[in-house]
Length: 115
Image 1 (tube, helix red, strand yellow):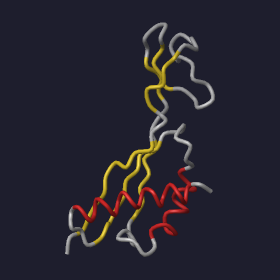
Image 2: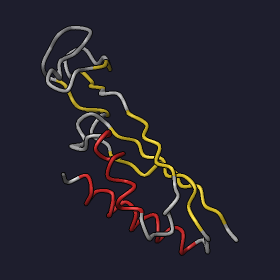
Image 3: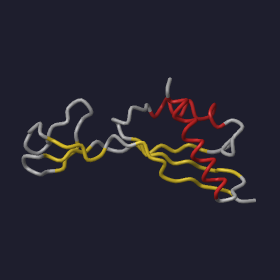
């Protein structure tokens, strides 16, 4: 379950941002995750309460926004949705595609509380 170590690294970033902004606590953490990020959102949600214990985000809510998988076709130039195990162009069916989005694991925003 590497999601626990992902949460611990995430919370290290959150604590740094909270420290830089003299925040008392963190209310919400928003992540954006693509299907090829290598992280399972449900397992991340399960690991978050364990990782946040004793941190400035001890009572924070974790919100996960799942991003779509999008490819650009090098043959016809179309940008279309794709499946994680089938990165072909949705317009012409060519397999010469470039991944545009879907492998992200981004810390999108943090809601801080100052005393």
